[in-house]
Length: 284
Image (cartoon, rainbow, N blue to C red; front, top):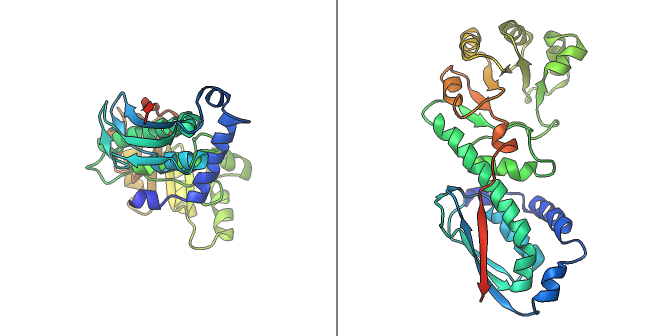
């Protein structure tokens, strides 16, 4: 499907390899000592709660790296909602390989499904409004690529991936370079015309200054809904407006109704609870 084909598989393999190396080290001594070579097994991935599935392509790469003969058969589509007790996927192969890969596979599946599930809840809350739910750089070190993928699976959108692919002038940049106008002008002079400049603002006065300086996007940081509405009136469509700061499920719709174009939510990656999923294994 489209989401799976969008994954950079060499990068996924690199992430998976690090995770397996961390877990297996010099060998899975419990499995090697207790499970005879050649024993075949069959297992089912079963959640104990409802959610949105994300991470099956990653799980496939985990098993492939441990033992390329192991076969994973997804029974629920990536991005599809599931209920407790639904069999998400089945795995067949030599028991040693399945047992060795089990924890890493579950870690990825539980974590990514948790992010997709929480993202979907935010997206659902504003689905009838012209606004995007976006992630932030508040991700688990080393897992940003996969966590950003899970956000897309859940119906959210990606913000800048890192410090290198977009300009976002934040409060500390403003403090050390002499103000918003100076910072924007410096950035604009050096940037190609294809790259936009975003400025973080905490007051309406800063919003005006940022627009006058030539900012393309204004981030409304920790503003009240009333301030956001005023900012929308001030902008009059001249710049994109992004709301950020402490966004919760019980506040996201009120924020969206102010007329902002995007809402960035750090919680969908840094605070998403993992979905509890078990691998039930038997001789096969």
